[in-house]
Image (cartoon, rainbow, N blue to C red; front, side):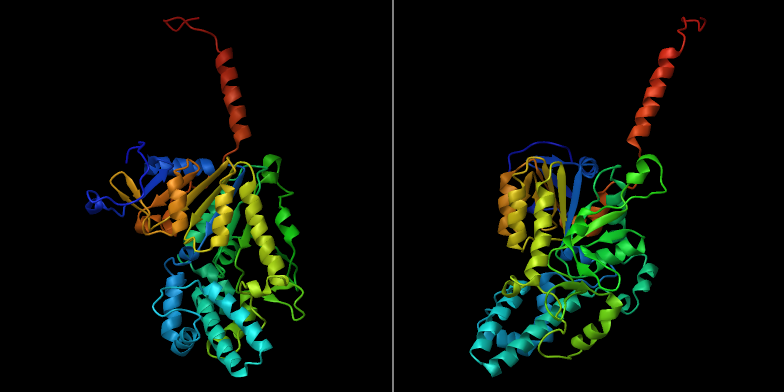
Length: 439
């Protein structure tokens, strides 16, 4: 595709519907970009001072991974837990045939109802509510396991070359693009799964997720302010990048509240697998023991609110920094809270936002986001040069996004400048010759 400018338009026209194509395309503001333009743009963005990636459920649906989108998760719940689904309809928690609800908001609503029914001593209703809530939690956990074998034996992740290949390559590319002295890249995710942690550990990369400790890993937000350096290296290599910051905005399968409810702890996957396996098989009708962390407004004033609130604050803070880029992939923009943060961040004139959006299509020279959520339509209508939309069906999936990022290279700007100066000095010092080559 040639780079050219057109007036923004965000819907199919009758003349162009037949030309709908699933080929990759990118549009920055009102300008179409070729594949080379897109890759050059991404390479430049990864060299900015602050780099962040926001991953959603779509990033965990690679070959070899059993992740689910929210719609697939809901289909699994409806087909696997028919009695709980019927009860939720009967009690007006959901409407029949209303499509896929926001499962996290539904769990939140059940938490609020539970508090009220407990106050009113509705014992029978509480039993059924706890059962439905537990089944919803089972569906969420099932969608987030990715690979049961890795939970039983985390060392087996190293033997999987393809399942986490795109995640590994993403981390490689993010880290390799950092220049000496630049802060480590940020990976934000709405997923509960451990794909990023397992990928980072398998390549020996330090993953800083806010938890610290050996036998008692508790959450301490100051860990996001710490960096790592190699004391044995020389020159600028001492200040290279040796870690990523991982911010799990909706919590994680391996996080739990302590018994007294005063702090978060993080457990290993292998340690928790026995509890998770028993729960998935039907043990405990009142919810996962621990309890496992799920976002809930009913608990927001407790420790859950502190941790998730701190993580959201970090997300907001990074987007407000000068010379920042955020690339989203696999994120459906169904979380209005995150959407508001991203929209507000566009007030930062140095922020560049790249959205990988398989639902977006190109009809002739018109951008069609009619299949996308209303928030995305509003962002597209801005036609801001700060926003680049990449679409085209599976050509905008997670593995394609990773392939567009620049390959890891070893590049020392200071050394390059020295070589350039030496070359120029050598040329200036060379004696002039006449046309016959003599002095």
